Length: 237
Image (cartoon, rainbow, N blue to C red; front, side, top):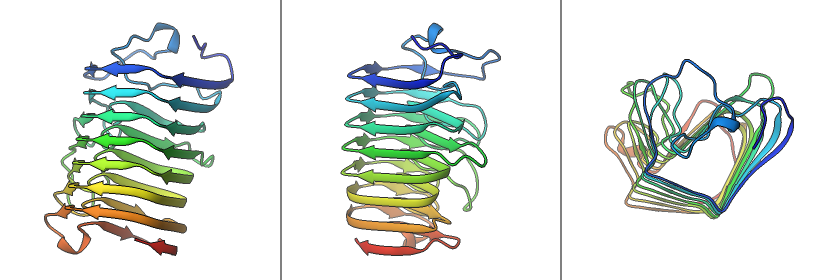
């Protein structure tokens, strides 16, 4: 177990979380010493420098989260930890509730610290989020990332991710690299059927495949929606 008073690293290896549901707001804070399988992974101590998830399965996870949060499987909010997600499986992870985003993973960096997130060889199937904002909302049916320094995503598969906006993925990060990744039948009501990118200073896209993605209100952004001053440095889509 990990004490909230200790620093260092956290590793989750070859673990299955299935049919876990968490509802409502919690008044108390949790440490990993009193967690049960029914809790999503959140409230990780700020002293943890790096976190890795390898060969883990998150199946039918549901969260009715606090406003402006999400992540039915993994929530890292106001974090300074660097996170690695490698060869994980997320199936039917759903974030509901008001102003929620990131159906499976919600990663929000601490102000001024800008941590890194790396996701590779992982699949997201039928993940979703619904939060009831207008066309300018920031969602991400599978993943929501904001205030991060670097986001690297390689060899991932998104299938039937849905959201009000940003069907599978929303990124607001300084540097983003997405490579060898498939988006299949992902959809958004508003914009970014597969993904949206917000003010990404350096953006590398390579060997992305989009199949059957849709954006209902903005057909021009049925695959990728790029917002703000995002700059594409290289791309092979």
